[in-house]
Length: 328
Image (tube, rainbow, N blue to C red; front, side):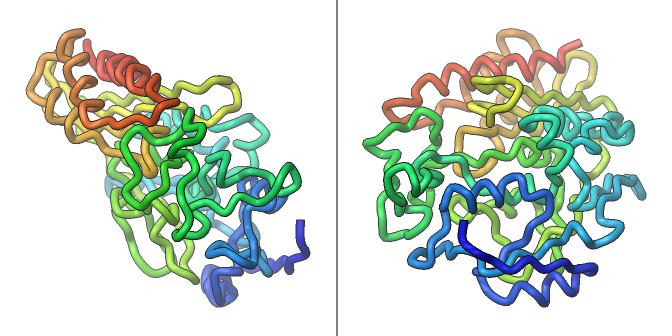
């Protein structure tokens, strides 16, 4: 780990003013960033420079709120994952977010990690995060766009099965992002509000600009008759990132689905809304046949790499379970 300057700020305006260029990075819980620094992901010779300054926003007061007003859940960016998971407000009309927060990593990480940080974390690709001390820095496509993605022709076990729109086959690791996409959330930053479907970028992670930070997440209250299910499959259930995850929000009239939002995690460079699955299940009576058909529609466009073909039937199975959870 190289030297850096650590700056505490007490207002959003001060945080924005301190982020003068891409070599200044924001830290809150630090569960992802400190790991990245220790592994040596950043370098002065790539498009992702080593931070010369860390701006600590955890010292900004009153940014960890969880409140409901005018039909909208508002969660401050500094709310911890543990607080979100245990919040009775979130567990009520927004239970999918609680479910997702509750399966992030370990209790210690959930106690430290924030919602804003979980949404803005770096990918977990082993080429991108390969420790410099173990055999040399790997300057992959995500670090320098002129270079290849080494998952192609390499070990692609945990990589995207839905292609690489910007050339990087890594998958976005955030559990809360998948749930929030299904919940149709909006991300409030220091200077704009971004619909969550437009917040993620397949190469840079998010569309945040230099000097812009996440301050709040807004979630509209789901319609009456809506069911919410979040299912995460990981190799080590108690700690790992998702191999595949599904967030399904279905509005039901009896046993018939009248509206749906279905998001997929762990299978694409960004959280992915499955409009194919939504179209297949809306208007249908939810049962084993229609759930399986919707899951089949979701993976119809999958193009797995040689080592991750297993993700296709895994996603089908988990999505079928998630849809069936809405059945009376």
